[in-house]
Image (cartoon, rainbow, N blue to C red; front, side):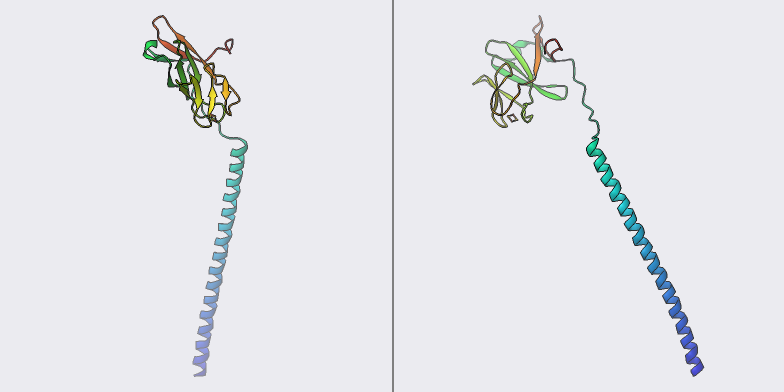
Length: 175
Ligand code: FES
């Protein structure tokens, strides 16, 4: 009996040893998994931080659409009523063409120099108004009232012999 018991005990000890070896192997593999996981997380976090900082200090170049030399607005100037306006696209920017009470045309980029809202023509007051903060510009594009501290950016309007309207950016001599 004793020998059996001791045999059993031996066998039991062997199982225990195996179990403890197996347990320590599992513990080691868990430890190394956690170690690699933490290391991977730290590397990822560091890379993300440096990438964010790099983008902050050197933002990517924006690919602006090339500005056209001119934009044809209307085949006939008569198509645009006296004392009215027309919003159109000049390259990637909105612009406004205004025909005043005397029939003269003026055009500006329509982005307000204050916070870049789109301005509108008010035929009643014959002023250009910005709906965002009540900025007002006269028909020469000059800031007249409200928060804008700069005038609107002017464009050049040409009406050819066939009364076709073309708008372009001013040349350097014209600015
Ligand atoms: S954005 Fe035009 S007045 Fe503020």
